Image (tube, rainbow, N blue to C red; front, side, top):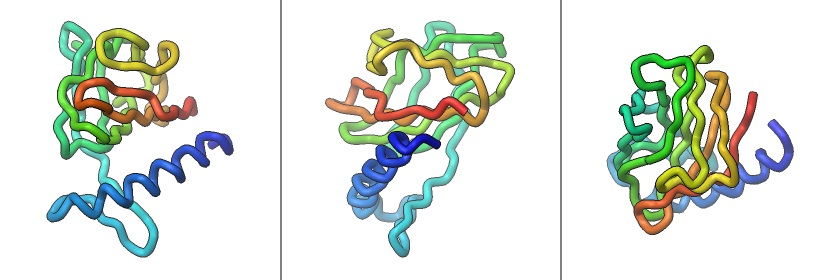
Length: 138
């Protein structure tokens, strides 16, 4: 990982530790200065390029509609103000292209998650708009 991405992730983890304290009874555990977040469910894009998340989603796998070779993610329905979301593609042979300015995603240009080791970290502001914090093209 590049130094810039590492610094951004460290900063975001500090922010998340504060939020974890408010997630009583969840699977998110803050112990001894570390934050452990389980990988969540697979979300499949619908025919309009949308996925739905809820406030408990933190790390999700995204797959293309009908297993297409490539598909555009244009909308993330759901989420809460201040929520952090890590997304990755489910399969290295199916690319998920996160579309900048598609509907409610702002990421400074289209980002292709073309390998199952690629990640993008997003922050939801105002409960509806998702902003890219960083991404890793591995």
